[in-house]
Length: 344
Image 1 (cartoon, helix red, strand yellow):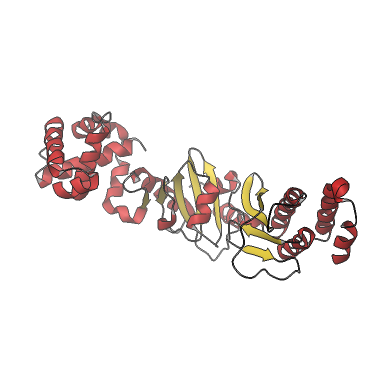
Image 2: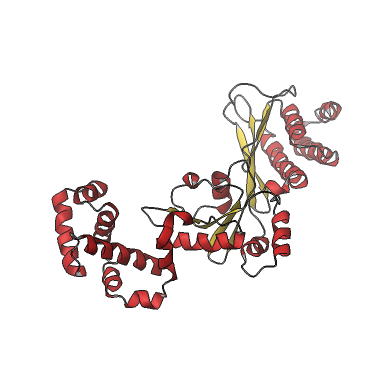
């Protein structure tokens, strides 16, 4: 490899620079190098520290030009490029060159990124996050044959002796990024199924879901049962509680089984629906139902308690419910929850 670098470095970089880079990485790929060897070769060619990072595992490889692992904190990257596999960004490559980028740095990183994706596909495809939606749908389908479900899980990279957790997700963020965050360093797969994102993982950390994501997490051992639970939990997710675990719902999960037509016909729910065009009133009612306290609701809304009191008086008249009584507060809580469930 060192001889190859020396031979290619003798060519005129102004004329044959890009050709040198292409030849260099073509040779490396024919030798079926792994990621550390790829980083070492790139650092030697670029004559500066080269780095590779995998999003799914957080693994970082940094190599100095002499082939040793780079020590100390990483310097600011002078040039970076994404590593893309099957239209999913699975990692990043970069050069840490003191001063401005070299004339061939862009070409080096372009070929390094392509080579890193090929190496990753060859040696570790099970670590990519995005998955074939057909396989994921087979895993969570209630009508799937158990042997077919087990085979799909194997193809997705899940070991037979490990549990598989399921989350239903709605978010503008890419599913692969969410999956990597909630299950770092362990098998995780994501795919869109119908109108909902699915995340399959060996563990799911509810606290690691990023802002802007709404998610429901199933707890059943069978993936198809966990998916049904996750979809139910997702229906209860909202601005105040964006991530809901099915096991935390308890008896509230029974509300999701009430036919939508019966819910719409209920006078309390219809009254809540009439507030839909007034977010201030809805937020006030939500804060009061969540806390059961005028002053705590005012603190949550960042309003004076007298202002919240006036709103609640008006809401009580509009809804026809005495919000100061425990029974009335329970009615308002149930009506608000059922109205949100209609939005699914």
